[in-house]
Image 1 (cartoon, rainbow, N blue to C red):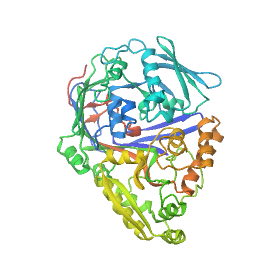
Image 2: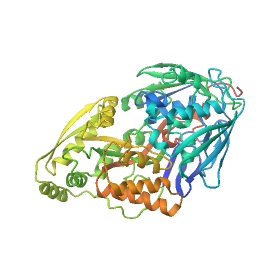
Image 3: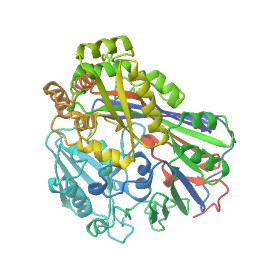
Image 4: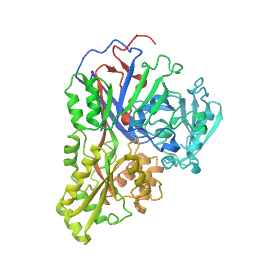
Length: 526
């Protein structure tokens, strides 16, 4: 079960999101801590400073490719999607008003909201939606996420405020494509800003906040949109997203009052904050997983015996305890508890089996492990180095800047690295793009006809039982072939000062600053 937990207030929220047979469960529990009485209502004015680990890649989908977790909150502040999703997986109108599927599920007609303008004065209409999607779907633009929306055949204008998505086949995850907070394609940018080439570094949308400035590796600032179509929103005048790579520095800034909210995956900070009455912890478990990625096309990891040996040497439980202080769960599949598959052949920690497989391989094994030059990356590398030494495998650690490491992975210029399996409400498209033989995002270079068959079935079927069987088959083959290893379940954590209000949930690591306000910041009216 995916859970969201916010320590500080009172009440309980359960979130159910489903797509044609795939049920995703999220629950939020608010546990008593800190000041038990909230302000009578939202206050207007003031600023919120949020610290993240890394700078954003950019906001133009073609140039940036995808939205890392630290950029999703910024994107949601400035841009909007056609729809949001409620606790039951139902589409909630945003820039779109309704989405109606055909009887065969092969096309969706979407009615659009009138009277909305982008921050640069460009009117929002069907042309802006069609132009955005056609650009991403055009193979000449080499959009990194194009494989994730492969079933979308075309997007056509019906009239000024109606568009139609034509699909190659009925596609269960279609709602995710137009509503997910973590898919960069779902956000609709100003067509003028995209044409002028400015959107990547100075994003323009229809959202509650307008872009003001971006100082690389320091801060990105957004300010209140006075013409926002949702009357009465947002509450804050300014939101500053600070880039603070070191977690201890982030936490110290929160304690000193320099920062109002931080995103973190450091277990020690989460545990400390839970015992601090001046702070609140918001946590959200997700699908996807922290992973240990192999390049299966390069020796010695092209041999399944070596990959299985490494799997048996890998003690995930120890790693979670040492690195995350048991604040995340063990992962044995990519689904984060959203579907149950039974026994998936997970290769348990067993160094003796690992040593036997290396002996069977018959040659010395040395690996280069590329890690990010962050405290988390170095820690991961040292733990892997010690564990694999127990089965006779030598590991050389290569620390790299995150961008440099990512480029090497994209180019296939690596043997092994720490990675993250992108989380999504529906994991079908994510698994397809990461594991299908011909996918541009098949970073492990794994190729297997049976895997391709299962991935295709999960992509094309809308029958609940058939689709779940295919997805479970994919997960089982990942484990048996040791395509990659799990380092732990994904869990997003935000820690905020107690006077920060209006944080409803942080699904996919997104802080919804549209609804945030600061107690004592200002007046009761806009």
